[in-house]
Amino acid sequence: MLPDLRTAIATVCLSGTLDDKLAAAAAAGFDGVELFENDLLADRRGPAEIRERCAGLGLTIDLYQPLRDFEAVPPDVLARNLRRAEHKFDVMAELGVQTVLVCSSVSPDAINDDDLAAEQLHLLASRAAERGLRIAYEALAWGRFVNGYEHAWRIVRRAGHPALGVCLDSFHILSKEDDPRAIRAIPGEKIFFLQLADAPVLPMDVLQWSRHHRLFPGQGDFDLTTFTRNVLDAGYRGPLSLEVFNDVFRQADPYRAAVDARRSLLALQDSLGLLDVPAAPRATGYAFAELVGGPDLASLGFSRTGVHRSKPVELWTQGDARVLVNAEGEPGEIGALGIAVPDPAAAAQRAKVLLAPPLSRTAGPGEAPLTAIAAPDGTHVFLCADDDWLGDFVPTGESAPGAGITGIDHVALTQPFDNFDEATLFYRSVLGLEPGATAEFAAPFGLVRGRGVSGGVRLTLDAALVRRGGWAPAVPSPQHIAFTCTDAVSCAEALRQSGARLVEIPGNYYDDLAARTDLPAERVAALRARSVLYDRDEHGEYLHFYTELAGARVFFEVVQRIGGYSGFGVVNAPVRMAAHHEARRGR
Ligand SMILES: O=C(O)c1ccc(O)c(O)c1
Ligand SMILES: [Mg+2]
Image 1 (cartoon, rainbow, N blue to C red):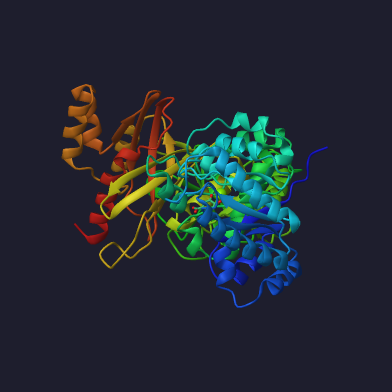
Image 2 (cartoon, rainbow, N blue to C red):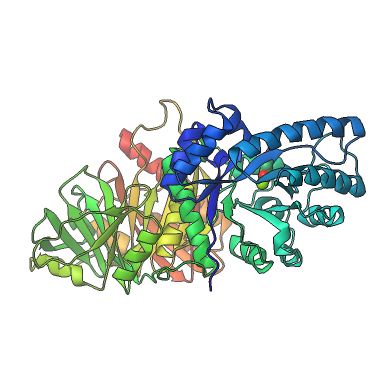
């Protein structure tokens, strides 16, 4: 039997007043909350009223937090701390919450003495037990003397009180690279609470890292699956609770952030085998990419091979590259992606369980029923079987010779910065695309962060880290479709001949390329003559070139992968961005 674990979220994760947070947590389907003390203090309602409000929303209060700087102090400080704790116990009784979090002391009053810490926590636990309450002791990674979970557990064991246990927080444990396997040595009933947070690995001060950069599970670099499995192996059956301090989430619409949060726990439960959901689809490629408005595809060698039976949509093809051009909507952006999956119904069921917003679509008579969901950036994602959907297009019989484009390599979707991590988790959990390393590069208008996600299809997500003032272009950053070819130099040559508008790359780029690589001079000359960019990694090479902007928000790339090159030519992005800006402004 799979344990049916409850899910909770700390109110500190979400934006707004306490009521905004509670309503959002309930709407996203959480079972409970960790009530952060400051959220209570700022609320006009008394604890009993807040308890009622939570009950009305179907939420339990699973933890009251935090009680700070309690243990291992001189007698006069202890007396003050007990008085403070008694007051909190009164509040907890009214709130109907049983467990309070005590985080390891950071106080200058604290003494480095485990026996004293154990003795004072024992005293606190016995006061709590008199009221039917319990104490969960958590090692903060920056605790003055106690900053590792094994140390906190030693103190709890030494104290030996049934109302005293540990709270395990994945951030404090994984940020220090502590081995989570030792968690299995803790009896499950002594793990009173489990807090989950992911984070990008950042070599920085751990307190700052924790307070600004935590992420929901699946969005960062930590292995939450192995971590949580260890906790469950120990016998813990309490809630899976998110405690994520993040500057962006704290300003985001709490309803949206709560859904993102809940999706992260559903995906984690799935990775642990605890969720009844179809496995992530194994995408087999792009069925199509859909552009809104009409950029010129003929000059790229595409043929208009079909027109939709009932909608103002044309099908343009070249090799296996299929682009739909939709006449309806804001011109010049990527409106939709068609992803080919072996079992669209199963993929749709998974998307539903993982809270992907469904899009209602009307299929005309005889047309293929396609499931579509909305990605966080608004892109419509169609889950397609084989080529069924092609039957919705009436063939035109048109066929141009083509320019050597053979398929779709990747689609690059620019994200609003605030949705970057949400988008990564969406594509990862709903579609089973694995994120690659995050790269940052200096573009003409500031730092850009980018990340590929891939598995059967490749996508890149990028976002400007900040956008301020009126100097940077007001138009949203462009998106692009990258096509594959087998010979980038000859493809660029052919497209140039046929009048395609390709980006011209400055000579400085090639001078530098010759200086930093061992490429033969003729090869550099051939790249230079056609403005083809170059990159390589330990697996292979990447040759690529770009079209000018073909609408307000879109351009095309053509790429040739040689060997097992797995990147996206990110090093070359700033050169391309400068060229696009120049063209937009009028050289
Ligand atoms: O940053 C903090 O102070 C803090 C408080 C409570 C926690 O559970 C925690 O992990 C961190
Ligand atoms: Mg914590």
